[in-house]
Length: 497
Image 1 (tube, rainbow, N blue to C red):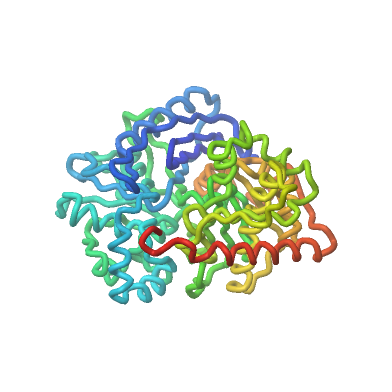
Image 2 (image 1 turned 60 degrees about the vertical axis):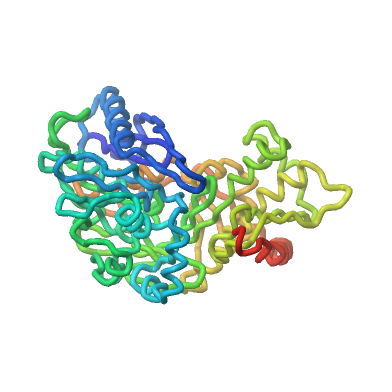
């Protein structure tokens, strides 16, 4: 049937990946696009840059393929807001990126007004600038974007899909539930846009895209692009949900962690939407063409790989990030040294913006290796924090943890993780699980893969790590971690958080 191509429109660049019927990557292209920081705490992208980079990477990839393309899938940075004019096709403002914090005051005002309970009940999220609705409110009320019948809003998937299917010449203004569920405007139980939430955030529902299944044909490629016309575009999901799909976590309780600058832990919790859980987010994982919906619990860890960068760039203790694993493995344990990397507060399950980075347990014998090991151990401890909260909330025991991301190359990290969780840790042999998930969603809709069971059969591990038999050592060290976390919490005055 040919290859399935995924477009991964990330935060700093776009990757195009071709996957064969066995789920193996057979070609790729990657290019970065510019970042814009107009004020402290503000992060923007030029939507035209994103679309140009999609065109370039797709064109480059297609030129290398010797097989036909069976389907195209899309995954994207979530929560980032794009607004454009349907008539002219022009962006009306730079895209406001998920990292942007300009709407923090508005979030505070809404919480004080009593909106949080409604938001939590309808969306499974919290009032935070991270999500899309307050960004759209800012664009409409402070950013000079005019309301009207030609106004189109979308996350990055909507913008790319609109352009792929023709733009001003019949382009489709669509999205899917995993992205919609990150906007603060989508009722994740009713699976539709909420008039009540639109009123709370001052957003006209006329600008919102149509929501279609994550796996199912959205449309076909238009003429005049860097790819052939008429190719089916049949899969789409936000990046972390796509990674959950790419890791073949199709059974409730199956859980994945992506170790990046921070880490995102997602657990499949089945077809029933969970009630709001303190410290965790509830989200739509995906919907399939048969109408079935899968939900997930999500825990966001702010700093994992970023702590390695801090050792390298801030302290100069290592020259290259790759040194961290061997240095940490050069000693048997951290000898009571703990680093709580709350450099920007603590994320899930604590959600404490006033926490700050804390290093405890130092003695005269503490050296570089102890600090390196404390950084690696902190990745495992933070993941245990989140997985424990998910297990308590969902009632699903985690049988194993599937992992990917840059730090997952460290065998010592994955062994520590297995010991802390008391379950096996399996590292995917395909690291680009986000793009792979988008490809699977598209290929499933077009018959490249017949079922979820067939996709599961293609998942493979390049490393499996089993926990030690004794719980005494891991539990004792984790108790020390919990004491260190308590010392980090509430450190910063409210005015400087």
